[in-house]
Length: 383
Image (cartoon, rainbow, N blue to C red):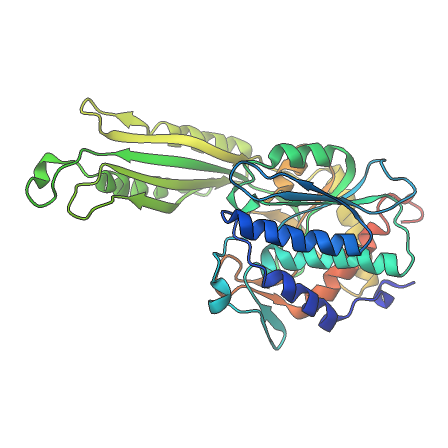
């Protein structure tokens, strides 16, 4: 059967995807994430998968593991790896409702990465419906904390990945229709400025503002950005009363580099900013989650060669490249495991109120995923 003959209908896929998009699941809302995991688990069970619920990291939502029936069940196979948490808070649907406008479809998390994840599972469903048995068993891992760097699920990700021969990640496509064969190194930092309190009206000069300290440090941090390593501060919390000189201000920063050595140098510069003065005021930096650099390796390029072959059969041309955005593919790629990322949908605006997918990519990428699943593990002369 040709890949174009698989049962993948755009309108039906959009209707199914709408259920996922309207089940909002911001990372820090455990109830919401678990509700989304339940929805995905129900879909997997309906497809015939065996599903295991994994208790989430402390203070975060659960994860879901699933495996599909296969004669070689238990042998190293293919892992479809994705996250179902999003950056959009509950209520975003009021501002960014699920809607189709021409060749675009909008919604919170639709591109990053519910759309790609849904399409990947529909690819499996279509293969099952067509009676096509994949050469290798297929498993799925859905995690709950990727948007904050996967601080709690990295051990689970790495343990599951080691059990498989190939890892496929349906994060958003790059450069239009491209896939990801590597990712930059990323580090997160926790920043704390410590001030000295006083009454802002009656004795302003007796105090030392933690907010002012942080403001100066933010400028210094972001000014460290160069071609080798970028620095940005994206979260700031400080003060409690406007008539009090602030005692504490906290922030979070992120650095990104194409090479691990450049990231390591950036980490050293950040950590060297820690300073405590005799009066107890000062500034501290602690290292948070780190995603290692993932550089293309032989196994990944072999997966891309297969993807290129499948795309050609579908009348498409795809490219590959490294991406600055982090994903859980950083972990598996850095482990040296064959990993192909960016297999999700085409679109733009993720992490914003303009997030959308290109509707045609829903079926196109599902077919691409189906083609990969049906070829990975075949002898070279048959692939």
